[in-house]
Image (cartoon, rainbow, N blue to C red; front, side, top):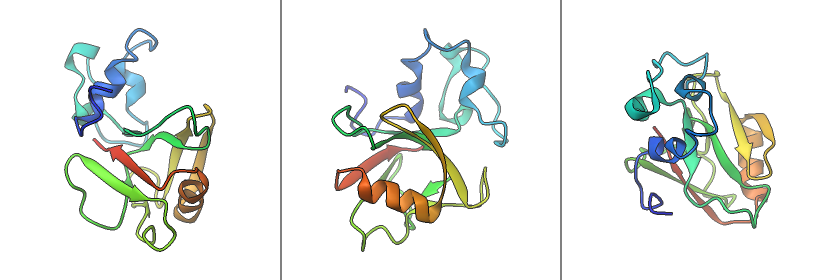
Length: 138
């Protein structure tokens, strides 16, 4: 929770260092970013994934993390991207051409992983049960 005020995304993934074999897994094979040599060197420049600052186990269908090529159609307020689940405000929510062209992967709070189109991402956000999400995007 101490990082939920808009801190860099890498800090959230650093908490997983005891559970991951190494930081290499934090860079998608489709991403041109270089991996960190160790967890002490981990920064947003070595990360392919965003994290939802508002994720909670109370909403298992909520997006926990996903590919960094997400957009809300507006310029993000660094480093947090605000995404509304409201149907009229989410028109710009989707995936950019980076990483997986106009597609992206998301991890839900229930532990499932889905590859989604922009349309499917909007549906997932609309149906998750919360009105807004704050994504720390590297």
